[in-house]
Image (tube, rainbow, N blue to C red; front, side, top):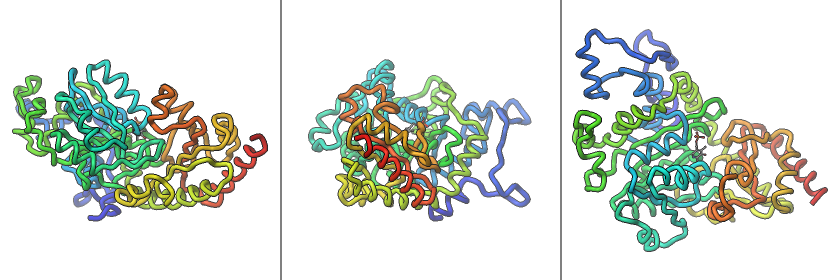
Length: 424
Ligand SMILES: *Cc1c(COP(=O)(O)O)cnc(C)c1O
């Protein structure tokens, strides 16, 4: 099946007389004829459902669909993108370990890496994406367990050189985890370029309609966890009667461990109803992504030509520093553009307040056009130094181009620029 078909049919195939649409299984628990059957599931949770903190048929259908779209062996949904990123790391790291990340990542991820993981005893070493291979390798410590990057960085719109970082990570015997939120598997499949694990905030394009927060971890099944660096996957797990994940589950070890151990203990599994809504978003994802990319390209070109704009970041533009990387990795650059307005912070505020159609909201990848000021909103907690490293300027505005008629979107921008020009 191709992507469009997978979006409609993967994960759920009704049998004779069953509902056409994925049913919402609104139940916390599952009934068995004997205690022995329940015991068997406790021994091996892949053998059946026992409790909806570990799995639920509605959620699992969506997990299967997303795994199929990314080309992975399995997936696990979480209650948010943040939970997905956190668990993807805790699944292979513990106190005393370190991770390597580029700084061009989502602001919430920077907080997680710089502050909360640090409190848990996991150090994040940032390496600039422009560093040479040698400089990146020199940043590794013996305790480094993974490399992290974001396909299309929110909000800097920098394209991550997945293949290069995957090669370096593999040379150093660790996996590459990629946050593929903005691209979605429709625009980029990181596994095809060597990434080992993919995480998403499904709250963005996958949901698409701004109706539920969610996340997902997808396992490529390709990384060799038996190289000696990951005892948590190979050695007996005393919290699970001595199971070795790699011995019992082969190339599904990572994703099954995440469910059996981390979901059991952290309990961030989404509700069936949320998964139902996510599934509806996924059904139309390919059609929507195409239109987002087309609308955003028109807006990016319009912004580039505007005298009120200092700089536009949209890798789809030929003038963009990431254009060559975008050509290699992306089938389109999503609906998100960031640009720097002349006049800094005050001009940015005036511009945003003067928009009528585009809404000011803390969201992105909504079906409706929306804007946000990263320096004072999503990236508010960052120091000036971190802002520069994340590629964020005081005059930067992030616009998430929606699916309204493109002429209405442009007219709205035009009126807001006119209001700014009067004052600045
Ligand atoms: C929004 C976002 C997240 C966090 O996801 P939530 O669903 O809001 O928890 C992570 N990564 C990226 C790239 C995002 O845009």
